[in-house]
Structures are given as C-alpha cells and as structure tokens.
Length: 165
Image (cartoon, rainbow, N blue to C red; front, side, top):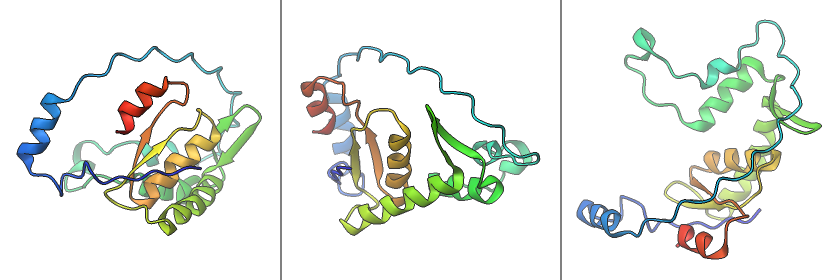
C-alpha cells in the first residue's frame, strides 16, 4: 500500500479568502468516463437472527438525532463490530471479511500509516482497484484520522496528476 500525505489544503493553514479564491479559480476537470460496473458479488450469507449491522451505518432521525453530533467512520465500524461482529461486512467473489476481520485488518494498516506520520489533516491518495483490499485501505485511512482521496488506477496519468496536485 502506498501512502501519500499532504496537508497543503488544510483549512487551518489557509485564510478563508484564500480557500474561496482558490476554489473559484481552480480549473474544472473534464467529466471522467463512467467506469464499467463490477459484476455483482455472490450473495452474502444472511447475518444471524437478531444481528442488525445496518443500524450502525444508518443516520439517526427525529427525536434520536437531537443533541447528537456526527459519527466518525471508525466509530461506525466499532459499532458494527459490537452489534454483529461475525456478520459479513464485505464480499468480493469467493472472498469475504466479517466486520470483526475488517476491523482487525484495517487497524493493522492504520497503525502502519500512523507509524509513517499519517494523521489528521493529511490526505492519502488511494490508487487501488475496487476490491476487498480497497475497502480495507479506506477504513485504515479513516482510522488514521486522515482523509482518503480515491483515485481510479485506470484514469489517464494526466488526470491522476491533476487530482493529486
């Protein structure tokens, strides 16, 4: 996994006028061609009776939402592990990971990123084809506190350069 971090675009390091001016002067990228749809994964086994992993990702509404602040991605995964740790979280072909496995593997990669100085305020370019590994990488970056910038490795080199500059 390659990690590239940058805090050049941190709102803490630039005055508001600079941020707004940079946005209005930035060239607009051309619309990227739509990627081919991935084949539908095999149907995952149903979670155990009573397990409700989808509740971890569902935003609160109405009365429950009052007084709640946003939930960070790593907190969503922790919640899913607590409520349905052995349920299937991600499937790719014949491979799958449970929420507990996804949490463990992404935590190892998050520690690797943090050990290399990646953290809040950094942007990590993720150029991994859509796969089980790409899901692990996105969770690892989120756990490190950094922002992930997904880049399709199939994009032309000029487009990738523009996106990461």
